Image 1 (cartoon, rainbow, N blue to C red):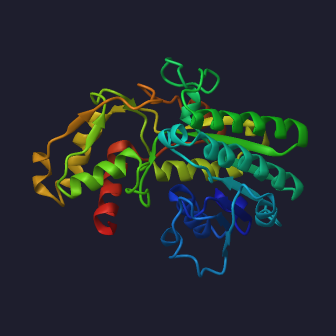
Image 2 (image 1 turned 120 degrees about the vertical axis):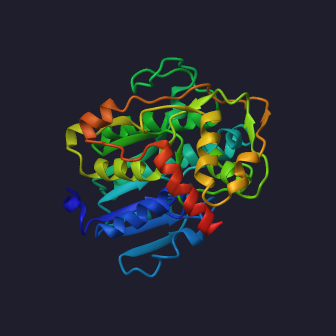
Amino acid sequence: MYEKIKEKRVLVTGGAGFIGSNLCEYLLSLGCYVVCLDNFATGRESNISTFKNNSRFRHITGDIRNLNDCLKATENVDFVLHQAALGSVPRSIKDPITSNEVNINGFLNMLVASRDNKVKRFVYAASSSTYGDSSSLPKIEDVIGKPLSPYAITKYVNELYADVFSKTYGIETIGLRYFNVFGRRQDSDGAYAAVIPKFVKKLMSGKSPVINGDGSFSRDFTYIDNVIQANILSLIADQAATNSVYNVAYGSRNTLNDLIEYLKDCLMEFKPDVLDIEIKYGPNRVGDIPHSHASIEKAKSRLKYSPQFSLQEGLKKSVKWYWENL
């Protein structure tokens, strides 16, 4: 099914990051030539070390805020998988200017560079944060609310720019609204670490994780391999599926209290006393939405997306990876 992209040249921006490095690795396994653009602001050299010497892989140290770097990276490229961004709602609340510069100015630079270098298709990481204060569940692509954070604003502006570039310049664009992605190589350290690796590291070290709120908030947690599938399918999808956005999730939701219990179950194999660790609760986090649950019918229909890993299945693989690598 993926023969269409064998031997093709694919640029992955943010290719040394969590999602980007997994995409680079998978594309190489398909026989693609891969260009990775990353400035290591949040990405890590260790994420690409295992394939850095692959003759089909090329890393460019550059910043998407620099148009010349973007133009260099998109030379002779067939497809772009744009993953580079400053994630995290709290980060954007603390420093909205930098989030805007990277996520909006950088995004626009990548679109311009892709247009000028005649890239065939531009697939980009959108976000479930775009749904904002919309209370409807499950989340359907055409029904969004007002953004609740600077980060959410930047990701919505990305969608607007992509739509304009598709209609004005004929670039094929596809936006993938990721829902709480987790898995191997996701950073467990730092102030803006995602909830799953943060909780895993705490539990592994015998410390109490802190849940924001009472644990009743729910999320559609999405394992990395489901996200890889959605990206590759977006590269080979019919032209009729382009100039649109799609939810990328498993299509179910679990509370944070559920998540902790699943993590403890997974860690039992490695740390039998994990069940005795107390869970602490703190205040709700500013900018967080209470519930997130995606409808994936559009992606199933138009992209042939079929997620293979539930939260529990993904957690088993993730916990094993963290135990072996942290």
